[in-house]
Amino acid sequence: MLRTTLLAASRSPGVRAVVEGSRVVAPIVGRFVAGAGLDDAVAAARRLAADRLVTVDHLGEDVTDRASVDAIVAAYRALLARIADAGLSARVEVSIKLSALGQSLPADGERIALDAAGEVCAAAAAAVTTVTVDMEDHTTTDSTLAVVRALRAEHPWVGAVLQAQLRRTEADCRDLAGPGSRVRLCKGAYDEPSSVAYRRAADVDASFVRCLKVLTAGAGLPMVATHDPRLVDIARYLGARSGRPYELQMLYGVRPRAQQELAAAGERVRVYLPYGAEWYGYFMRRLAERPANVAFFLRSLLSRG
Image (cartoon, rainbow, N blue to C red; front, top):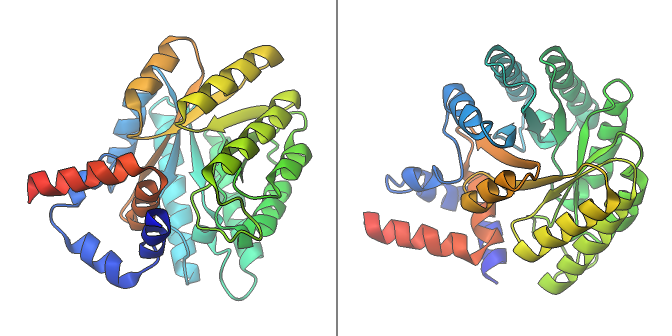
């Protein structure tokens, strides 16, 4: 119930206005978001890259006009140029959301998003790094995977994201586990109906393990995005058994000590690092994912109140 309420709040303009207008919230958001500007993102990426890998996300989603698409593409071009200039290309890539690149626009949204994503991929290639295409709610899954397939025709290193909570994902893992494929497997952060998704946490976890077995048995690079210690242990076991590379991925600000310990133990750890002014939806989904995040948020509000 709490998760559903928070996810509903993430789409509410009224709640958004209250949260964004609160002077005590911004410092708390800083736990999960690197900052509003490009300098903030690059500085945080440089710190993290000392012992971990990084994927940087310029926050934004559900754009409603072409001018916003162009602005986000320009922001990614600037970000990728800074990554290259800072000598971080070997350890830092970027993530993109297709709804931020026009996917939901009423006329030719998928084509607009594909063209915009292609521009970001071209800039990433020039910076000698890679791009991962984030997954959003289930209504966009087919379109997103179609865009990924089209991008891979020119940029085979483009990463895809799959959500274990969706009933279809085990089959999608089989389709995407080919040579050279990069697939980030996560639990899923959207409130999906039971007709297409598992609703019980135990069922999502079981699906995650089944999907992980498919990916680690395949010929691509499994990128395992979870903070669950049990699933991390399973991923490490399956990865070691396969004898092939894999990544463990976690969010900026979530279990940072565990990230450092895994990296020190020789694991390939990547941190998902978001930045930008459009932090509200991302922040609310992070609260919805883990009760501990809500408790941290409430304690911080009380201490600052």
